[in-house]
Length: 255
Image 1 (tube, rainbow, N blue to C red):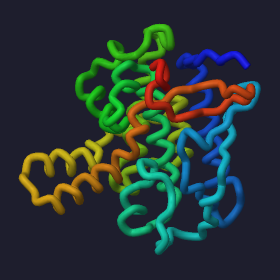
Image 2 (tube, helix red, strand yellow; image 1 turned 60 degrees about the vertical axis):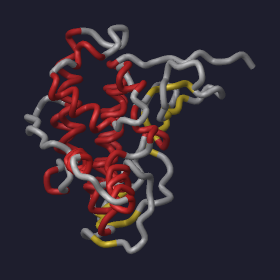
Image 3 (cartoon, rainbow, N blue to C red; image 1 turned 180 degrees about the horizontal axis):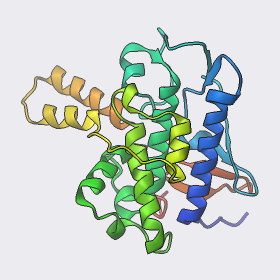
């Protein structure tokens, strides 16, 4: 079978998929009946695309039926997509899925830029925060994947992604709020600096014994996620099924 050429989806396609994922999570949280279903493992590689590029949420192996916020003694999931309160205390709520969605959204945007794809050890959350501070996202995105008229929408999505990955669950929006913000019907609140960036930078300013350095590294990894969280790409699978994959570098020869 001849090797399939990797293709990058343009922003319009990505945004349509993001919109569909949002609606799918809303269904789980609000329309699936009571009690609520929480997925607990939202990430790019469990999202499938059909022949019309409509997204489907898969892999419900960790999903829980949730009546109210609860504490789970066994923390399971994918590092980088789990929120701090779940990693540290085992707290489960719909805001767990909001966090995972936020990371996925930021990876979708960072995968459109060379810096996002190439910085393999830099998490998409930190990438997005640094881009936000510099105000230069228009200089980073591949011009073949978006045009000037779409930059405002991309910036809004980046703000939403940062808002969804806030350290405190109370600072994260609900998924219905996310949908209204994506549609431009609701103003996006100004996100705070992601908590894990503050912790990692503070740790770097102080000399620590080996154990302390390991703890700081673990704390940073919990918020930043796997090395693969540096960039996301969209790829057509060899069997013809469209699947969303988390890629180290979409365009590199060795990937």
